[in-house]
Image 1 (cartoon, one colour):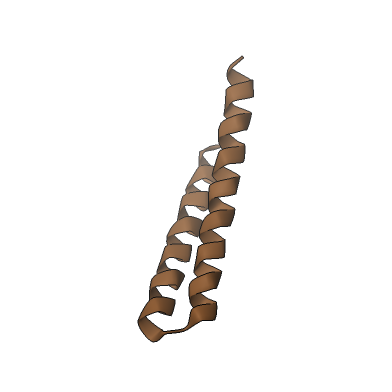
Image 2 (image 1 turned 45 degrees about the vertical axis):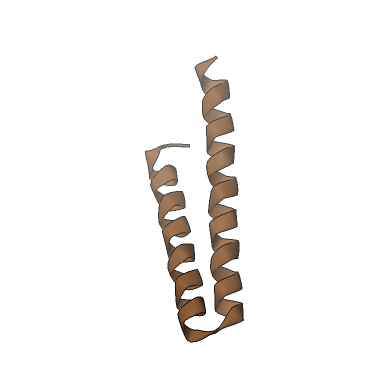
Length: 58
């Protein structure tokens, strides 16, 4: 995976943070939860990228 994928993951995480903050501000628990889930997905994708990068270097 390249730099584009890493940027996409970071953007997804930022979007999740925005959703979570909007959910908190509007007292919308489902939007807040959706934002947290988006962040978790982005974190998992980034972890996968790091693992792939580690195996490429060897």
